[in-house]
Image 1: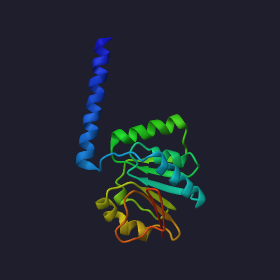
Image 2: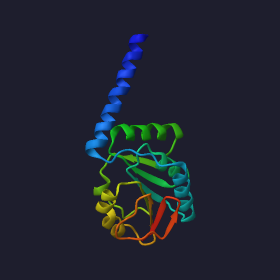
Image 3: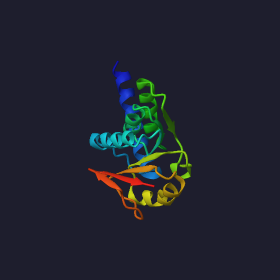
Length: 167
């Protein structure tokens, strides 16, 4: 029994080390969104009658899952294999047919079919995708950003830390 416990602890430690170095070298650090931001996102998306949404850098999926639970078709982009596994497990547990998990680089994604995009990204990453989002997404769609603002666009509204941009 002690042997199994030691193996489990070593396995979890190994996963944690992989997650840390993955975030350090391949992506932004994982910082979860708070409940207020998630509730504000869901409220705005429901009010806007959004049908398709992308969560860029979805982390553990808490935002994407909350959105998908409302019936909005949601694509969760997450490169970190550990975090995307967490999202996939939750998708199965909650039976979320409207949630798709993508281990793709969202900087190479096509945003033309999304009515909304949710981001919680560092300013340098926002700068790299700003032009693409604001030129590819359909007129009338919304971009919701947690805390950080785009350099060349002003939010239409701000709810707590949620910046709402209309295209």
